[in-house]
Image 1: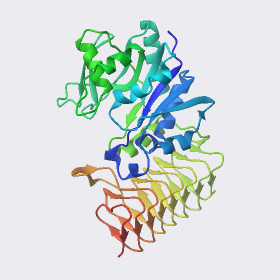
Image 2 (image 1 turned 90 degrees about the horizontal axis):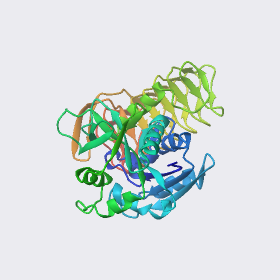
Image 3 (image 1 turned 45 degrees about the vertical axis):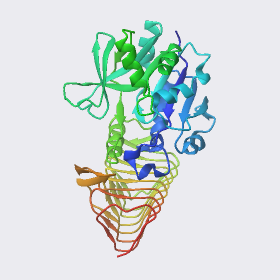
Image 4 (image 1 turned 135 degrees about the vertical axis):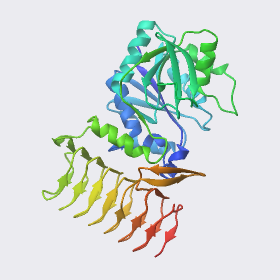
Length: 400
């Protein structure tokens, strides 16, 4: 059975990544120099997928406007999930789109995966002649995800967010199915109004229906919390999984970027298209400068992710920093880096490696400083000389 179509689940918000997801869904957050979802598409197309069916929901225009009707000459079809009622419900929304397919992939669109992982699932599924197949990867900590137990090439248990450390295998969110999966999802009871694909798979396992598991060593990285975006970028840079031309040892610079001869790039680092690094600036290591971003003269940017259209003023210092889109950080801005205590919704996570996260369209004037672990909501204005020591809400104006 040859598989040439994929359903990509990209409808969710990613609430624990607020305030960065206030204006876009989690799949469109930056993973090094590009959105997470673009890495997913590349992995699928590299593995031979010829048709992409993308289930969109929250802020779906951000996905559709970015990719349009095709990506790398592969048609992209959008399917709307108007209410986010779980991954199983999202898959059901794509039923008609893949009605003519003998088999198809289903992939989470908010986790970075590697082509090899997709190929391993496809090969195992085609050898098994259909049914259900999922990718399994070994991780040191699976407590925030779905754990897997296998016997040989069969999955015998799925455990969501296990409370013990006995599990080492993780459900990587890369599946292959035939059309029988839709009836199985339809018959799965809802839990608190939601329908999870993993609940369907657990029910099939309990009914002694074969669910295959292929162990793969392909790259798998996910961002659950704001500081995780730095880890995702780090993994991609370490593995050289960026697409722009290479300038030197682990240094990637887009053809249309302008890096001044007196600037210093310390690998691993990527500088995206149409961006500018001005004289005396030091960028890297572990820095990703997004499309049309500017790093001012004599600024230092290290262990950071600067999203599209970010402007960093002269003499600024940014360590462990994540910016949203169209952020402006004025001259002398200081982000000393983590660790810090990060408040996400009603919980505080102590000692996280995050200098600050500054969401879309924040404007910070000169000499603004940020305490480790602070989050700044979109459209906030920070006036000259202020020190940010706690989270700043959306649209707030902060004076010295």
